[in-house]
Amino acid sequence: MALSPRLDLRQTQSLVMTPQLQQAIKLLQFSTIELSAFIEQELERNPLLEREEADGPFDVTTEPVVDAADPPLLDSLPLEPPLVDEIPAAGGAGEAMDVDVDNLFTNDSAVDAVGLDGQGSWGSGGRSDFEEDESSLDHLAAGEIGLYEHLVSQINVDLTDPGDRIIALHLIEMLDEAGYLIGDLGELATRLGCPLSRVERVLTRVQGFDPAGLFARSLRECLALQLVERNRLDPAMVALLDHLEWLGRRDLPGLMRVCGVDSEDLADMIAEIKALDPKPALRFDRTMSPVVIPDVLMRRAQDGGWLIELNPETLPRVLVNTRYYATISGSTRNKDDKSYLTERFQSANWLVKSLHQRATTILKVATELVHQQEGFFRHGISALRPLVLRDIAGAIAMHESTVSRVTSNKYIATPRGIYEMKYFFTQAINSADGGDAHSAESVRHRIKVLIDAEGRDVLSDERIVEILKAESIDIARRTVAKYREAMNIASSVQRRREKSLGM
Image 1 (cartoon, helix red, strand yellow):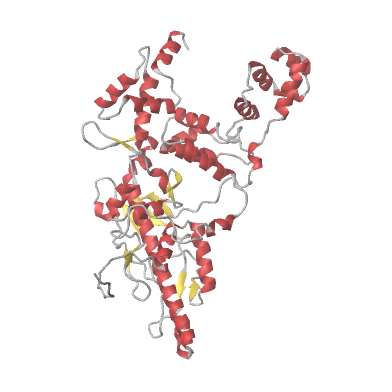
Image 2 (cartoon, rainbow, N blue to C red; image 1 turned 60 degrees about the vertical axis):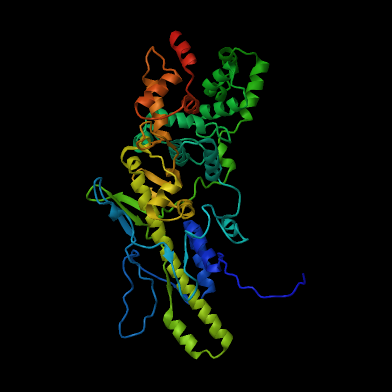
């Protein structure tokens, strides 16, 4: 068979990641600091962009007023609907929670119609970035890692329970610059709506973080934590820590007597104490935690519901100077100059619209997140609902990747504190009767309550499973054992032995 050239017509579909779409995705996942840095770069590069200067608070619900007789000086994006949303009290109309803004943005002069979330066009995963300089903004805060980042990374690895993570984040905020815990744990428990015993349990967990000695409430506890890590906290060392003031006044005979050691052993013990770090946090950057400016503000509404609004302090005040564009383009004769001005004008318009799309998407996700986790805001950690990205994405008709980008590095200020949105996602445990699923956190809390309330009759893991199933919580015995061990609760055999000994 002879080979000959021929022409074939084929129709195919492909997703083209335009630079504008790449930028839209990056804008959505930017934190407040990263977005501010990006806007500064755009203001320097694009002569048609201007920063809106305002002496008073920024009103996100209105457009700038211009004289109708003159051409518009600044082409501002009409922010409709207002970037404020409200969740009515229980029993209110659910439709009021959503923002009537389509997640599809079209800029005819700049890009083809492409959804910000890529719904219907690409997979459920998706990279966090589509450019090679993936860490370009990470270098803005170059330098050694701070204590806050160091501890948060350990929280994300060591604490799987979202409620425990929230408590641990609050404990980090209670550290002074030396690494000591200041503040009242009882007040924290009240604020989060959880038992004091749970806060103390989480404190015990974070006291095992690196470096040893953090989260101590006294010098003695700080040194003891470091000795525990070195496996050197024996009874003699405990006695020495209990009489540190004697060491300060160099009462060596008294220390030898209370510690039950001779002079040589005491000298070795004192050398070990001197080798410890009484201020373990000072080896890190002095900045304990970054200044967090919440992207979303949440407060109670008059009807008992919640009012959700974007923080006007974090909204970029960027406008397009159309008068300057009209003046320059009218006097430009060079083809390259005209092309450059057109491209800059389209880029500026598209950026302003993309920022508006980013703002409405964040508000939409935050509103649904508050609706889903309203129990936490009213009753505390024990009322956290099971929640995954798919739940939010399905409720607001967006892609899971969009929700993931919105909830990362975005913070919401609530009556119970400031939280990153991603901390409200928790795994679910199925209901035995086919009803609503239960949050893993609420199940852990219930197990703890059952064990704390047991008398002489110690509950085995199998008995706890039976009690929970009677409460419509479908859980396996090994899961109960896993949760119990994670809370540092002994087995039923050990608890029965301790009770028999009167412990």
